[in-house]
Length: 376
Image 1 (cartoon, helix red, strand yellow):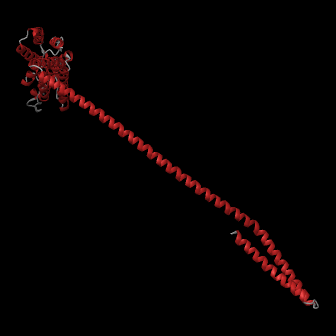
Image 2: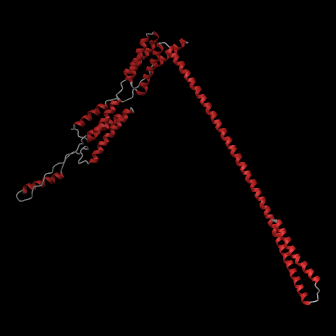
């Protein structure tokens, strides 16, 4: 761009100098005889001088702008070069970061695979060890004499009996299990097992002496009473039929006067003992509330039976009997049957039994330890 401006300036200067040279040659060649020719030559000279001055002024004014344009173009080129270098650096940095992230992810994945492999190997080793232990145990059991099998069965039965006593309080099942264990010990016919059999007999005698109420049966009976409570008839006072007043007339004035006389005195003096169980004209909602109150007391007795709380059980049964006697019709057969059932249930003792620990499991365990020591 600078070369183009220099050529343009040189061309303009050459164009300006060419007319000046021609004018000089004409002035020198022509004689200055005529006054009109001199004036024209002078005017042409002035025009040439003015044109040269204008061209010089234009060149003076354009030169700084051309220099500023050159500087701006150089700065623009530098900025473009700097931006290209920065973009190249950013691309290099992003590529390096991507490579680094990929390398880290690959490293983590490799470590995770190694850990999984180690865990699998450990699990396989543990499984193999367990399988080997089971195989050895099976071989020992297979090679063991029948005596050991019977003793293992007796140990299981005795432990199950203790579990029935403490967790389920099923004394009958525990006694049956102990009897089965004693029968198996009798098959061995070994005098060294005599202490174990004596301990089993003592445990059977202790469990047989324990009297436990049938909680399930009591719960079922209370549930049936709750269902019957909705159908029991209530104690209602029958409405009295009032005598109708006779027709007022002169013929029966005696009957009319007697009726009003007795009605007046009946309203003033009506001696009757007030009883709390006498109710008049109970609404449907009131009857339902009385039956629901009886059901709630029976349900409370059920919960007390399952939780073995004798005081709450007896209190709920007393409340139920009191409500039954106060609010329900005592002449009805269903009410009488429920009252007798409540009396029988009140005689049931739901107190949890006090049973000491069974001695047969510890005695059998001691014998098995002695037997293992003798075999060693």
